[in-house]
Length: 245
Image (cartoon, rainbow, N blue to C red; front, side, top):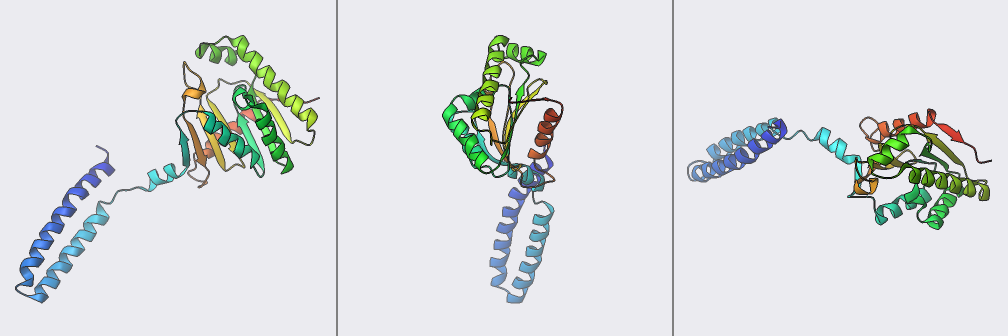
């Protein structure tokens, strides 16, 4: 049994029992001697405090980890997509996005474009990592989800074309686009290095069937977002930057 759980069970059972005994003792002693009552009560109270401190649950580690999770969507849906787009619109310094084709974000083109343009007005650096359409990992992942790889290639090329069209029409947009060649595990949207919308690609199904975690970088030492940001930077540094000419 988990030690913390065991301690909570022991504490939950013995502390009420001790309190009942204390009540009975005090009731009897009140009839005999006020001094004795105060003395015995103080001794028992000290014992209970010591016991409580000794067996209190050690919540520190769990609390730190849970504090990193601000919100949880059971799946990537219309509500989560709107939340992601709103986060892009409200970014102050940077937007970093990792995915396979980004077709979900592009599914509502006008809203997504408006969010990127709004970010550009704040001089936000926007970086997208997209799976290399010529990658063997695309073939593997497409078949893992039971889909034809050529469809995925078309989706990726369509997204690249949309990014290029946007950059042409909005040359002031600080937009970077990189292809990466790695088996897709995570998809992520990281806002200002502080808030992350993090999901993963499950086996035999699409990412829309997996939960989406909204993480906050509240603590540099323990924040779960930190290693994910490092993963993003690694894929970027080993990827290929696409130009928009």
